[in-house]
Length: 205
Image 1 (cartoon, helix red, strand yellow):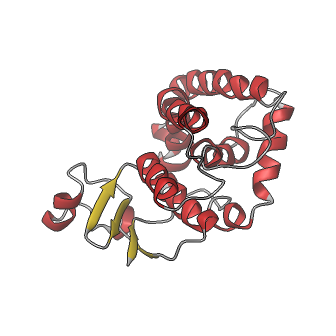
Image 2 (cartoon, rainbow, N blue to C red):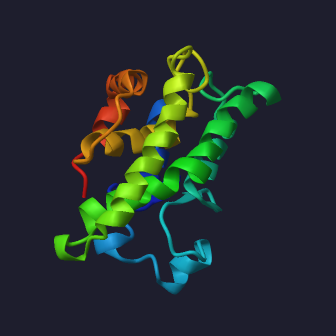
């Protein structure tokens, strides 16, 4: 039995659900975290001491950290979405790490300011800085997509999942975005994927 613990409003849970759908894997998902709670119990903290979602539970095996879970699912379930050759796989993993090291921080500020923070409490200066930083990060992908349809080349792979989840937020939030037509075209290609449309391209909350 494969179980994903975490609410679907979490961008990190979205990554794992989307990966399972693309790989054609059976799973059940249980709402944990946020308004559902349950992520600070002793039982949950024994699985993930950070108290964050998601957690993957699979026949006694427990794993946390969303990008790591996506990597594991790809490695454990061979498909063209996750190549076996070390160099080919490294080209995917670099973009997954890039999402964490470059894209995550400014996108988190933008989302939390505009979606999770009451208007009187918003730090608009921090928001403006984050929008600028995120725009510079997305501009890196603009250059990449000048010669590639997806992050690993011409075909969709699991490399597209981490940044792809953030792309929906980038194009949905009420911010002034730089003109990045190649990134926009990539986002539109993702929207054509049924799992992305169903589990990621959701109203922001």
